[in-house]
Length: 571
Ligand SMILES: Cc1cc2nc3c(=O)[nH]c(=O)nc-3n(C[C@H](O)[C@H](O)[C@H](O)COP(=O)(O)O)c2cc1C
Image (cartoon, rainbow, N blue to C red; front, side, top):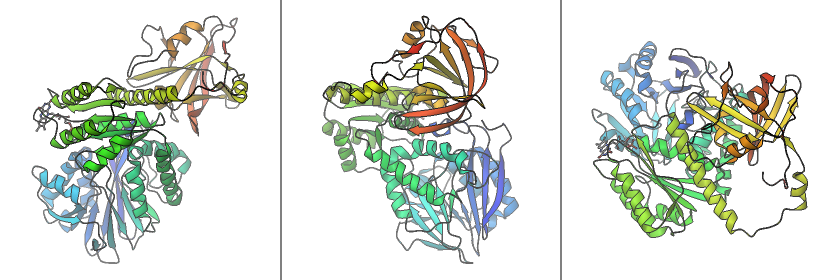
């Protein structure tokens, strides 16, 4: 985890007449699923000083004061001609307001959806230059800095806009190619250490929008950037080609999934969208694709197609003035008339005090005879960390139900000889326990093996749809509780039972806490306190390699319980 330090702004020249201003938060900035690895983040803004001056992407409200102070050290605010916005949200508009109050001459350059959001905001009435998405959209800052603009809308950020400076070959990619990591490194020199963070960021914010990501990549292919000036985390200088290929590959993987879930929502202030993202993460991690649809932007035909093609649909809405927004009501009508009654349904939303919109969705789907993949999720205003985990686990449950019904429909085939042979591999029966902040989880594990002597290290294979998987990223700690033969049935039964989303895995279980905060089970004959070093992406499992930092043999007479299986295709 990043060490705790004051927020600051790191300023650095990145190209001719171009500075990056990285607002750094060393601690988790927001309760959104994409920040869950808790490595802090940076909100990157850029300043291009040609004959005219452009500022790209001023940060959100948590940085307004320190950012404006740092900006004034670089330039008088009265000299800024343009502010270019890669996306907008209510949080970012706060800084924009403060900036425009001191620099009313600024012209705001943004996409059409962003312009609509700005025009609807209170106390904000800037001169706008709206990008139409044609080749005429050029902005000449002088001294060679000719900027072109590439609209890259996604359901999450309908106003998405990338900017390319032909002179410096910098692509200002905003939400694309980022990672939530805070540190000293301006660039991606240590690509290996960023690997997991980039993938996690993609999985959270890009995977549920894979179709739009592919469309954006296609547009960006017309440019020849030598640098991705990203919105979050280290700038991509060394890995431009590699990361572009990975984005192509990861988006394609989503398209290849045989089942998909339509996730249809609207969100005026971002809370319902935050819940949607956590649910989507839970679905995609179980190997089912998500097609996100922002009801405020989507065409009815898109909603219809998604409702027809999906194996299940999940709808979310805020409650505003006692109602669901009109676009949600329209989308609801489309879904009800299109999706066959065998499809699995889900409902969620953020509300303030009454939550009629969620009630409406639940009632309509119930009356129509759909069954639900999880209990309707009602979140008062902004979700916290525990609620986000609950939403993620609900998404995973939803996906597992779909997979189960697909398996049930498939003809039963006896285990092949190869599967039976693999089943003869045995492993020690263990319980992995892990906790971080408010969150704690556990799982039964038998695919455990010593991997190194020096340093002492082991591997554990963790199914990608396990709830505990999010607590097993590099640098996290966990305890491997090794069970005793003869005393293993109790814990085995307990930890193998299906848990509901958010259900306490330790309810009714006595655990002892180690000095380092690890959780030990009384049935363990030995325990090992481990730290994750890396994890390998292996089909349906993560193979987690961890080194052992501490441990104890509790019962030297007992034998380790061993798991004997019939086949190698499941437990
Ligand atoms: C103008 C306005 C009207 C609202 N009306 C209701 C309401 O009738 N009932 C309710 O439960 N919450 C109401 N709320 C609270 C919102 O539902 C709540 O802020 C929610 O988090 C918004 O979700 P969103 O961020 O996804 O837009 C209202 C909020 C605003 C700003």
